Amino acid sequence: MSDQALYSAHINHRRERLDHLLNAHGFDVLFIHSGRLSYPRFDDRAQPFRVHGHFNAWVPLPYTPDCLLELRSGQRPVLWYLQPEDFWHAPPKAPEEWWASQWDVQIIKDPADWVKRIERSEATAVIGEEAHLAGLGDHIAVNPRSLMQALDEDRTFKTEYERACIYQASLKGARAHRAAKAAFDEGQSELGIFQAYLHALNEDPMTLPYDGIVALNDHASILHYQHRDIEGPKAHLSFLLDAGADHLGYASDITRTHMGHAQTREGGMFQGLIDAMDHLERGLAHSARAGHSFVDMHHQAHQGIAQILSQTDLVSGSSESIVAGGITRTFFPHGLGHFLGAQVHDVAGQVDGQGRPLPPPPDDPMLRLTRALKEGNVVTIEPGLYFIPMLLEKLKGESAGQQVNWPAVESLIPFGGIRIEDNVLVTEAEPVNYTREAFHAID
Image 1: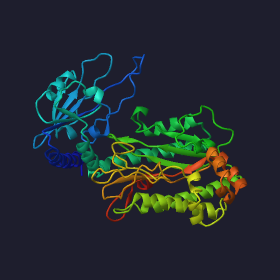
Image 2 (image 1 turned 45 degrees about the horizontal axis):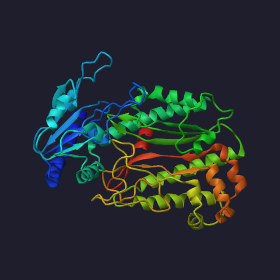
Image 3 (image 1 turned 135 degrees about the vertical axis):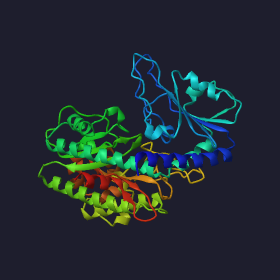
Image 4 (image 1 turned 90 degrees about the vertical axis):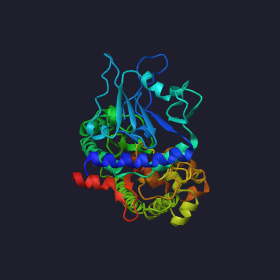
């Protein structure tokens, strides 16, 4: 299907669901504000802007501030599209026909033009930042909880249009990952590798769905490593890249770990761990099917990591005893994955279908997705195995630390750690691994 046909079906699905929800929750109209540019205190330089997921789930305008969607049951949706007269900045481009044909597009020059639409005595819901919507009238329900929960639940099901967007983002990310790996093999610095990633992406860095993690050697043990060294290390032992791409506001979120050319005994062991983690991740991704509990999948990841630790003689004992002793949580301290879509960490991951809380297990507070999977979900699968000095020191002081082969573990600290992450569509049958398909398509 063409982009226009996919988008048309997407909007029809969204409108049908919203008509039902407006009636069920007692609202006549829903307005969705895209957001507004913000400025740091004591400065006049605007901060990077991106619309929130509820707006982008309707229109492919991820970088357009102060626009407004007007959605009424049974009526053609209206987009109040801000194109200000401004010689300081370039205004947003004219709407493209392939998606604008689904909307009554009203070009405005000032946000005050759409403010008048909200000043009515209707049962009105508005989604947006409270500070941007203040003073619009007491009849307005800003971010009403029950409606928001229902809309969040709808967003967990990805339409064919959204699936196509995520796959296109996966293709972009896969190509850029290949370029970054080549830069690593050439011995470039973290900054040089990141520049190679951006060059292959051929897009402005502001379009990235999140700030990529480019980690050489022991930096890979810092889960959200935020720097990019200008100079490379003396030896390129390992490389972890967690970086995605954007397509029409939808994200890919891809992580790969590679070993350098060092031919040390520890390097050989680290490569073996990468291979074992890749095998584990593929199996977990293959189990992402409708009806499967993501909490159970997370526990399966711990079992798999325990088996790897045992089989490589990094930890003694059975995999069951390694998990029971809490040892795997030293090596894998984060959750298995999360929903993915118009937000990298997409909505409704820790509630059930009725919006009731599903908190993560006490031993796994970092798990972002705690519900059973459904057909149409897109999730990340990202097990990790890290050598984090702070956590290892803590384990040393515990009785379970006696099971650890400390000389072997400490020899791997300079390599940092391993994370492998794919983006997977859940179906009633075989899951679709967008990331693996994208890498296969470009090879």
